Amino acid sequence: MVQRNRIVANLDWVTILLWLLMISFGWMNIYSANIMEAHGGIFDFSQRFGKQLIWIGASLLLAMLMLVLDAKFYIYFSYLLYIVLLGVLLGVLVFGKEINGARSWFIIGGFQLQPSEFAKPITALALANLLTSHNYNIRRFWHLIKAFAIIAAPPMLILLQPDLGSVLVYSAFLLVLFREGFSSNIMMMLAALGLLFFTTLLLEKALLLLILFSITLILSMIIARSFKKGAVNAAIVAALFGILFGVNYLLQTEFSLFVLGLAALTPVAVIITINGFRLREYVQMKILAGLLISILFIISVDFAMNNVLKPHQQHRIYVTLGIEDDPQGVGYNVNQSKIAIGSGGFSGKGYLNGTQTKLHFVPEQSTDFIFCTVGEEWGFLGTSFVILLYVGFLLRIIVLAERQRSSFSRIFGYGFISIILIHFIVNVGMTIGLLPVIGIPLPFFSYGGSSLWTFTMFLFIFLRLDASRLELLR
Image 1 (spheres, rainbow, N blue to C red):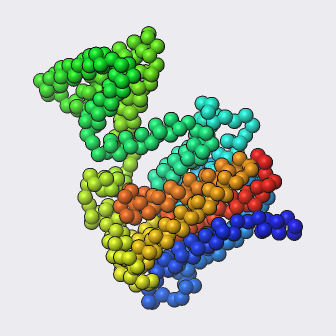
Image 2: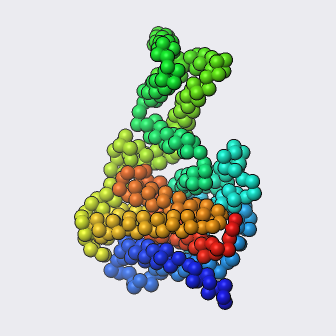
């Protein structure tokens, strides 16, 4: 009894209050998005708002269960839970039900459970265990590979379902590694690759190759302090490209300008590599390696867009970037979402008075597009409140994470912060047309038991660890 009273006294009730505000306001908007005059009261369990009440009630019980378990349980059994998780993700590929083209769900008693959602907190536990294990050093190459393996295994299985949105969420764990000492140079490189991804889609590959080569050449001349050497390399590449272009034209072959450019660059790259090893010009070698990585990344993006992503996923990305315009096709959801949010004005049309909501112009408006219901009925004031609520919640979790004496608790806390942050940014971003639609729910807000249970587990495991912060030393 003393132990239980101490846990209750040490709980961060500010965070719990913010959590209750989010799930309550979320339910209000789910109710508004689904209510019809012919429906019964709020306990009409045939409707989404009624089912969400069941999920909320179950999440309260789940929260208490997370608090009752000893804090050390999450440390000692994290790897076992992770192995069980991988088995469940394999099982859903065989026994799961296919919905909307993805075999991601188990159907239990009329309810749908998505195992990929529960993978997030369990992966965070396993990662925290690894990073705090004896003699682990994140700056050692093979140690870093182990961390990447733990992060990558669940999304690789999820990709087979396929569920691209859930896969992308796992990139958030890079923020955890960065907080724990992951090289800032590598983080900058990953950010540069992210920028290169979008420029690959926006620009012709041949033009992008020319830009990258020009940047590489300029950097090389600055470091070597030799304009002459850079000018010679540029002249050789230009001459080779001209010759190859002429031959391609005369023989009427179908090699693209990008392929011709690569062919022209290759001999020069080989010469620079040989001279680099001979003269020990390692900085020049790093610059050349950066160019090579960029080229391989461009090729991989092109391959993924044309061979991995499905046509509707490709179109969503192209529509978001403005490459294509399809307001009645793949761009319909976002277009209607922006209309709904914009029509709310400053103070909104009033609760239960949203016309776009009532007439169901926006598909999935109680799940992935719940934010447009807020925008229409509550206006700028309502959307600002939701954004500030999430910002306050994230800042509070950061404060809690930083006060931990246990590295395990801090790392797990930052895992929670990272996952919530990417869900929040992507969900709001896609509803206002800034990011592609990839089917990511708004945490604690969107309809769905799997999502609500997952984030509740995540939160209350962390709160349980925080309540025992004076006892946990690892």
